[in-house]
Length: 288
Ligand SMILES: Nc1ncnc2c1ncn2[C@@H]1O[C@H](COP(=O)(O)OP(=O)(O)OP(=O)(O)O)[C@@H](O)[C@H]1O
Ligand SMILES: [Mg+2]
Image: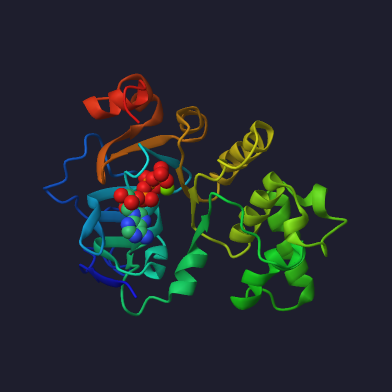
């Protein structure tokens, strides 16, 4: 089991409903503005250790509504590790330890009273490899709403399944085969099914870890279009190895290097006028 020792958040839901961010620690070395308007999920001074080894050092950043944050950086720099902190997926990793503070709408997500299942519904995750449950297409989407009691009856559940598949851009392709296994779909369809499954439980934040890396360019383009649409309703953070993808889908970009968050800024600015030498080296292909 992992242990989590997180500082009490500076703001609580009652007194400060996510309008202002907790202060950025003075030792934050990140270049650029780590805060964002409409911040929903706020990380401050986050460190992650695997046993003795530190994988993330003092990362502070906001993830904001109606915005896609792209996380880029060379392999092994801690992108997935940081993303997993944001909905406590690191809890499932033996020896992983998180310190610092991560606050979702004023609530410390590492609080001992936090219901982790509930948290992962509010902060959903889409993985690199599509991972539908070994169930029908319908059941893949219906499962979450059912366990969270989001539908009063079958009619409501059908409606949630329909709406979620529609929003994920999959409904027309699957409406006549809802009872077929989720795994019978193509890779791109399976990834959209996983997105439908995530949306079905009314998340506020969607985390995506290289969601297109197993997909062909056409399936990738569909997911990218979808991310752009989903931005209207959710806060999104996406890890990608493709700088073209980061440029296409995100409004803000965060550059990680060896566990440090080196630079954050508007995506256009990061790619045209990076301020830190390490960011420049990476985006111009001199590193990674
Ligand atoms: N379960 C684990 N146990 C121990 N160390 C780990 C574990 N997962 C990741 N690490 C280490 O933490 C560091 C960051 O890994 P992480 O997977 O977060 O990087 P990444 O930026 O997502 O890389 P990639 O682009 O290759 O996916 C690496 O040094 C890695 O070896
Ligand atoms: Mg990774």
